[in-house]
Image (tube, rainbow, N blue to C red; front, side):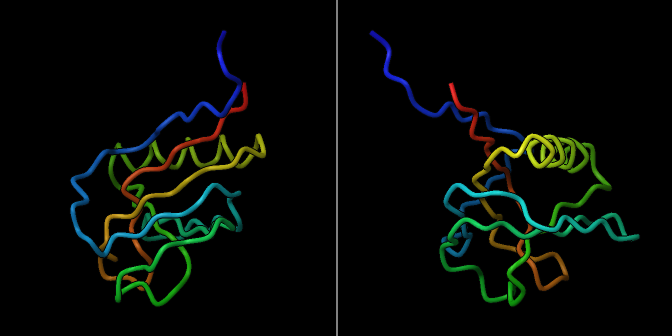
Length: 112
């Protein structure tokens, strides 16, 4: 017999985020995605977050859409937001010149 539970679908570019300072979140919903003209997508997430790196003084996350991987992550983020699905976010531990941590990858929680 199979147990019912959450199936996690992982989307995004898998980066070697070996930094001990990278943060992650518990499962939660996407709040206020903000695309800006430099190719970055900022968004907030309402799941609880582990301690972010020192550069992340802003509680938002960023995705760089100037890369194919970033565009794919943004498509997954929008799909999850439109469907009202929860996600779990994993950071790189870097901020790439911003005050928000860059997303390494995230998983979309899909109910069985």
